[in-house]
Image 1 (cartoon, helix red, strand yellow):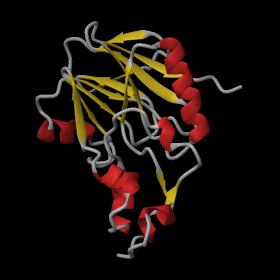
Image 2: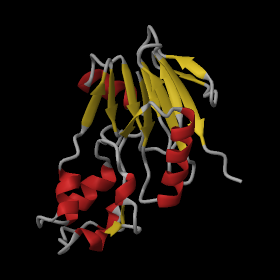
Image 3: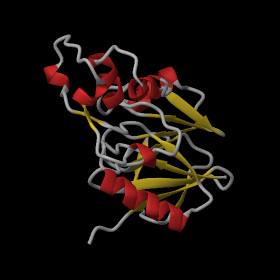
Length: 199
């Protein structure tokens, strides 16, 4: 089965539309799954001082029509966490964000955002917290990448790369700015790093 993994959208409607169009063209049968940071929180981490805002709209970048593009399941990222931290009231948008899971499992693979571990410590954190997961997909850093048994492998764009027989960690890159995503074939045990060309 094929899965199109995309994340770090940060409320960028134009970038998301471009990626969704490429997915529809390249892998129309793929199941889409988000890796978090669907929305952009307008309050930075350094500006958190315990304040609570009356509505989600006050702390979220929310272009018209973007909600209709989120037609796929997703996990939450650090942006969603921050939005929830800054708001407490019940409203549909907050309820939607609050219901996003921390991880999703697809066959042998697990999807997690990546903000859970300290910078450059993914391998150690995953070994401790998700030791059984042979294939891990994440985002957060906005940098596409792949490691196999702890060794970095050069990304070959739009070419199938095997994830069979090793512990593989795949950073799917970012939709915002870069328009990157990954196509995972769970039966063939391959990934393809994809990127929409920007003219």
